[in-house]
Image (cartoon, rainbow, N blue to C red; front, side, top):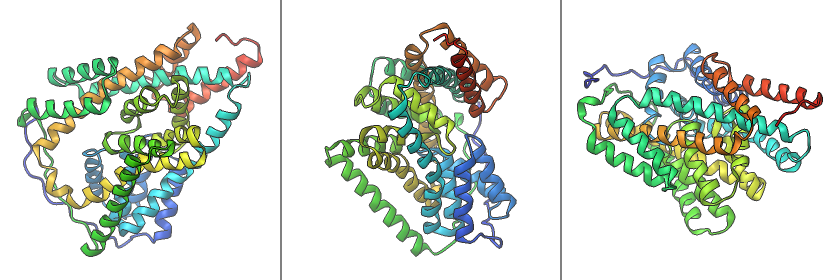
Length: 408
């Protein structure tokens, strides 16, 4: 077992002698949002920031550690952290919007085509193949999480109980709360590795506090709107806000909560539509959770797509600003680390449930099983980029359809 680590030196804030202009920074984040997929977002962020001397490698790595301690999509949070460290609140807001805008526009276009033309004869088999490949990719993610976060009987028990709870339709938010309680109660302090490095935030404290106040006020306003507006848009905003406010990790870890909200609780999407929305989230650049646009578009069109995007991404934007200010003071808390470890174990079990539920619907033919296994093997063992996996599947299905060999 890992023992508690000795204190590490303070990380000095970079001098920012080569700090970018606001236009340079926003333009760079727009380009990353337009071109980066999955882990490539992390590599492009590091290349942008470290190679240009905007922040040190240690500062970026410490930010990467920080964004894993609270809910929200990791790479979006890291982008906000970098912008906030470099140029403050206004830069964080503009870079956040620039990072999301390309994938938002692409997802709106795909959603329009899907809900208007998905029933065409030549389109239908493509989505069947995509849905089967999504199952293979989700299985890969579940196995990957199990390898990283289920390493002893305690985490295995939490993961198994989370899976069974989802199977019996226990509320996913309640599962997370119970996992936190279990982690705090049963993990021992010497099982937790603590990073004690610190960093300072440049800039005027007064301006930073003003930015925190404004973003916190918006957070409360959105929460209040969702709580009291019982219209479809109000329910959509609150549903996405709940998911964005409590779900940890990346898009795949947040997916179980998203599935329960939109498929099982509100019945806004069928399992088929949910699987197709996941596929769109994978093939478009930028954060995977841009799938929220697909959900919102189906419900109320463009207004719904905007509200869903705000709801699922804004909570972690606020958390990132807040955590950037207090991270050095709280990251050594053992209770926080215990809770995080339990949450990640629970999410592992919940992802296995997502794989089961999607597979039960999508894997309804021999060909579907073939596409599922192809995606799993290609991603897990050949390390093929997910975009290429989907491209191969779509190209093959088009060829089979045109040749009259479609077998679904």
